[in-house]
Image (cartoon, rainbow over all chains, first blue to last red; front, side, top):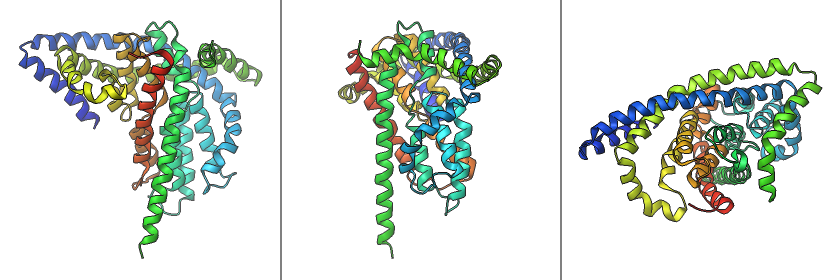
Length: 199
Length: 178
């Protein structure tokens, strides 16, 4: 899919330029874009060092864990199939806690651990369980309090108020997450009905 | 000052002060922890450099040739009623596919239109509040050998779609339209 999007952008660019008789524009754009990209990436490096450095402190000091504990009452009802003190619950909470702080790279290892534990609870190995799907929806909903990387990118691009988007991202990721959970519940009950109708 | 604005203004200074203080009080070697994490940040930046080049070149060619103009022209009637500028369309396609690609594309939009423009803010909100659905699904399911994912992809894409529309509405509501 990514291959197709990329190919389509480039091919249509070259084709349109050829039809308009201005292929030189393509050569020009390709070279200046490539070197501009490297400048941008170097500027980005500073922002990434800052946030991943902070995220490491949050991890080592147990801040993510403390946040995760707070979320237990909220998460329990979403995962009826997972016992409250099962390690899967702990790993899922750590993963979502790291995501809430906008520390995506700290979240992934916890997420992978959570999946391993959920698979252990899974009665039908190789097929996604209800809990796994709900967990993934929470992850892809991208729910976070602080889109740290995004704020850094905006600052680097010269924004007057780089953090002004925080309120909006909060509202939007809440809406997206709720929609995902709603869709999850709908699909699940539809499947259950279909399964019951079958002899 | 409205509460969302206040929250926005204080988020970074608060985290910058609070995380190291909390770590220090918990007896963490905060300086070395920062350096350790920062090293990871540097390798992340190097890892995404080729993504940034690939996206910048593709979008650069697409725009310079006039193909973007054509696409924009034809998509206007579809996207306009939804409040989504056509310039955002590539981001909506790439966002669920590649986190690094989306990051690169957002950077490109921020530099092209300015971070405080409608397009710049919308791109920031979309990238800041949604995640890489296809990548997360394949990584997480792949790690435990789950091959039948049932409705996971559909539910994730519903979340993305609602996120895109909500982003357009919220940015317009908070900051004014394009």
